[in-house]
Structure formats: structure tokens, C-alpha cells
Image (cartoon, rainbow, N blue to C red; front, side, top):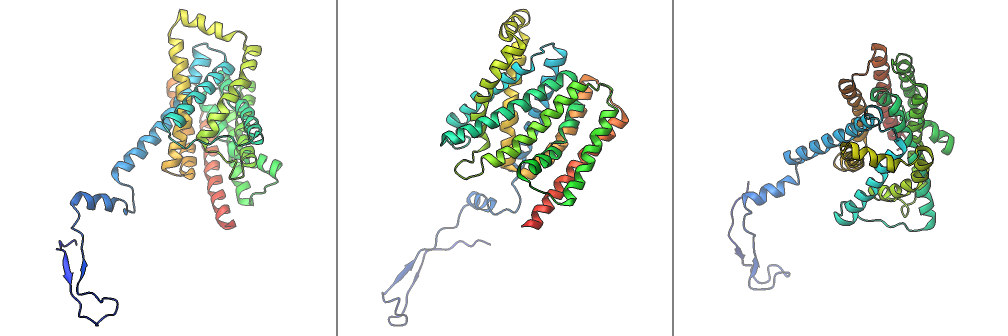
Length: 358
């Protein structure tokens, strides 16, 4: 309870306290704060987020879902239904977009502090990560030409399995028996889903596995290469450096494998201007995936992002089936569910293992 008070004057008897040897000591009691001030100050001590914070976090999570699912569906539409069969060039457009938008976000909007590259050694490490990143994204986009999004997401959910394998092969890091046991349903689910997938395509399946393995390899290698405090980069800064390097890697590949794709794109644009809108929109959404990924982690936690990612795979699969009407089987859905369950068990086992180590 707040009680309004007037400034009071306290008089002490001389000699009663050697520290108060003046005739009068004035202690000013500040005025009672207004209701608005009390509410603003109290908000900082709430044990739970304010309604406005909850709304903002919910909107960020929704944006993350929409951008992740949106880029998958747009890629699938362009590569399989629209007839734009140039996954390497499409990936290069994504990288150019990420480079430009990252520069604006860091240097103009100042969403995160700018971090310069400090040495040639650090530059080479980022270049190595860029090459792995290129491999993963190109394989992922290529697989969408041959596989439905639902099956693509089921394979992508096996990333923890490849992460554990690469961590063991590269760093000799051993996990607990509980963690390895949790990976069994991850693999079992994909075996079930693959055997019953009506639109199974061997090449598409292999490149999708390559994309998933590349994603896992990047996370392991990134943990090795950028370990020191001096070299560690914020995810937005790392993307700003990796994206242009990836574009330079992809340029000769797309010219060699896909021919004069820029001329072909311009010719398509003369016939149908919609393709420019699709490509620009697709590239913008590809950057929003990275931006919202950072914002979700900032407003929640890395663990929350992992849980949301597991749910995102299932949501993307359902949405793709509703939009593209690709056939699914009960056994395929069961396999996907087993894989997701394995990923959840793996996350919980990893969390307990870390808690036990600490």
C-alpha cells in the first residue's frame, strides 16, 4: 500500500548522536508515484510476460511457421508444378537475397551489432561452412523436384541422427546410451515411411538424405571452427558473410549444370511476368526463415525452437498434402509419427544428459 507523505524535518538533540552534529537534518521523502509509473515499474517484476509480450512472441512464432512452410511450398510449386527446374539457380537467388537483406538488417536497421571478420583464418573457416551450406540447400531444393513436401519433411526430421554420427566421427564425442536408444525410432520411422511412400523416388530420396546430412555436418563443423570467443559470430552476422560466399560458389555450378539460366528466366518473364514475382517473393521468404529463426530464439529459447521445429515438420507435411493433394498411406503417416516421436525422445535424452554432466 502506498501512502502519500509530505517532506518531513527531523530534529536531533545535540550530542545525542555524534554523526548528527548539526541543528537540523533534512530528509526529503519523494512524492508518491503516479498510477502509470507504478504500473510501468511493476511490469518489470512480473513473474510472467505481459499480455503485449505474449502477443508479440505469438506473432513471431506464427511468422516463423509461415515463412518456413511458405518457402517449402513455394520451392515445391516452382520446381515441380510451375516447371522452373533450376534448383541451383534458385538456391543462388536465395543466397543473394540473404546477403542483401542481412546487410540492411545489420548496417541500416541495426537489429544486431555488426561483427567484422578478424583474420584470414576466420574467413577461411566461414568459407568452408559456406560450401557445406551450399551443398545442403541445393540438395534440399533438388529433392523437392522429385519428392512430396510431406516425405521431404519426414527425411529432414532425421537430422539429430546425422548430427550424432558426425559428432562421433569428427570429434569422437560419445553420447549416453539413452541418447543413442532414442535415435532408433528416428531411423525406424523413416524406414517405415520410405517403404510405403507412393511417390518414392530413389534419386530424390538420396539427395534429400544428403541435404539432411549436410545440415547436420554444418552444425558440427560450425561448433568446431568457430569455438573461440573472438571468432564466434552471431547467426545474423554469420549469414551475412556466408550468403555472398555461397553465391560465388553456386554461380559457376549453375552455369555449368543448368546452362544460361538467366536468359531462360528472362524469356519466361516476357511470356509470364508472374515468374519474377514468384522468384522475388520466394527469395524474400527464404531470408525471413533466417530472420524469424533468430527472433524466435531471442524471444523464447533454443529448446523452444527445437520443439517448434518438430511440430513444424508435421504442420508442413499436412499443409502440403492439403494443397498439392499428394497421396499418403497410413503406414507412411505412422512412420512419420514414429520419427517425430524419436526426435522428441532424443531432445529429452540430450537435455537430461547435459543436466547430469553439469
